[in-house]
Length: 271
Image (cartoon, rainbow, N blue to C red; front, top):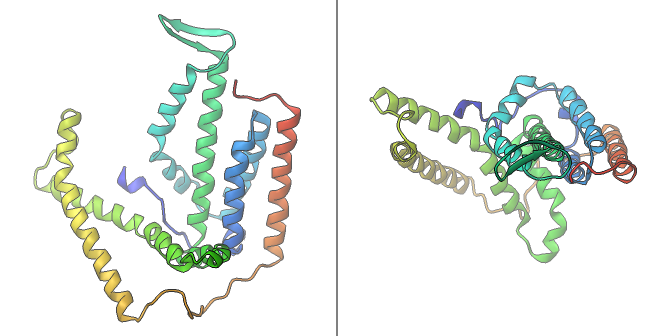
C-alpha cells in the first residue's frame, strides 16, 4: 500500500500540460475543484469528467500512475458511498428493519463517489506535471498580493512545497522500515485491530527519528547556503504566460460555463 501512494511525485515530460505555466495549472485546478461542487447533476458532472479525461490524456503520464493515486482513498470513497446509500428519497430498492435504500440514495452515492475520484485524479495532474521548484515559484507569485498584509508569502510557499516534496521520501522510508522489521520477524499484518496498532510502534519511532534528522540536515544545508527567505532573491527561471496558457484558460472557462448551463437547465442529482 505504501508503494502505491503517489502524492508529491513528479514525472518529467514535454506534454502540453507540462509546458503550461504552473500558475495557470494551479488556477485551473482550483477552478476544477470549485466547479466540481457547482455541478449539481450528472450532466454537469459529465462536463467536468470530459475536461478531466482530456487533461489526463494530454499530460502524458501513464494511466497506471493515476490509478495508484486512487488506492490511498479507496476506503474513504467506499465509506462515503455506503453512507450516502441511506440518504435520498424515491422508490425503495432494498429495506431491512430500520435501514432502507432507495434509487435516490444510489444516485447520491454514485454521484458523490465519482466527485471524490475526480478531485483526486485532477489534483494529481498538478503534482505529476509540475516540479517542486515550479510549484514554489507559482504559489509565491499567486500569493504576492498578500504581502500588502505583511504575510510571509515566500516562507509559506517554501514550507508547502517542501512538505509536498518529502511525501514520497517519507513513504519510501516507511517501506524500508517495514521491510526491515519484517526481516527481524515482526508480524505487521495479523491479529486484531489493537494488535496491529501496537505493531506500528516499532515503525513510527524510527520514522519520526529519521524525519527529524532529515529536517535538521535540510535546515543546516539552507543555513550554510545563507538562506534568509525571499527578500531580495532572484530566480534563474522566470515564469511567463504564453498563448498556450491563454488557450488553456479559454477552454477551461468554456467547460465551466457548460457546468453552469447544466446546473440551470437540468434537475439536481442529489436529493
